[in-house]
Amino acid sequence: MSWHGIGDFLHMGGYGLYVWGSYGVTLGALAVELLILVRRERSLRRLRAPGLGARPR
Amino acid sequence: MNLFRFASPAAFFPVAGRLAPWFGAAAAVLLAAGLYVGFFVAPTDAQQGEAYRIIFIHVPAAWLSMFVYVVMAGWAAAGLVLNTRLSAMMASALAPTGALFTFIALWTGALWGKPTWGTWWVWDARLTSELILLFLYFGFMALTAAIDDPRRADRAGAILALTGVVNVPIIYFSVQWWNTLHQGASVSLTKAPSMAATMLAGMLLVALAFWMYSIAAALLRVRAIIAERERASEWFKEAVA
Image (cartoon, rainbow over all chains, first blue to last red; front, side):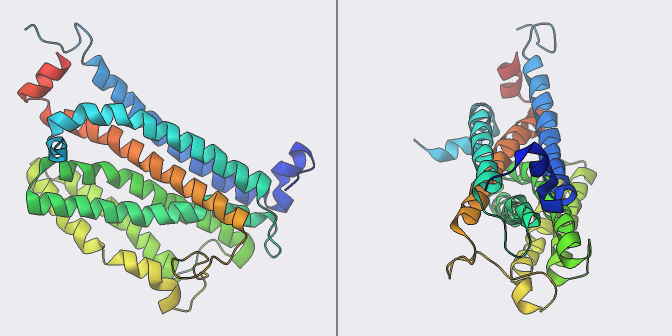
């Protein structure tokens, strides 16, 4: 497949709204889920830092 | 090595943390490759023009929505029969990601349906049973969240998940059983795929990427669930101290 420049690529043969609407929402949704999970993971790691939830042993 | 050792949340917690980034990296590489093939290698469709390129996420997302449900129900069944805590936690860890792929399948289907069928939505057998799948995921998540005692929540959720499995073959065979709008399968195990090889390659790469992504997401989420439930236990206190 050869596209004639970026404009042609974004135009998607007249179906740009449908194609990019699909890809945008899909990649956006996956990115948001990943962000939430990575934030939770960071808060788990923070439990390990001294003074933040660590108990004297 | 006895793999059943990892059925213990204490043993699995660090393993999940180490494995998740690798599955995430594999997902990113496969997704990049799949999208490259989908947009720059696969030819324009003779009938649908460029609109068909939605296939590269629509079909993989739909596959994963069903596959994740079956895996989730499998973990739920294991938890119910063997009474292993980690199995139920894995089921809970998979549900939101499965629901996400179900939503993506419905969303991209609507955006593909509008230019090709002339409608965003019809009460077609395939579309309706996929929507029921989304409600099964929501039902599982709501039910397990609504019961305070985690072991009772796990059992109730497991029974709901197992009952809902009946919907998966209904989705899969709906295009054969009912002659409505959604097209039949282009890819099946019994006959050669009815599409160009490069189109198939792009679709399979994205399907693998979504698969790896689901594993990474489930591993990260199961760590959060373990932390939440085992916060008071000795091993967890020692692990984070």
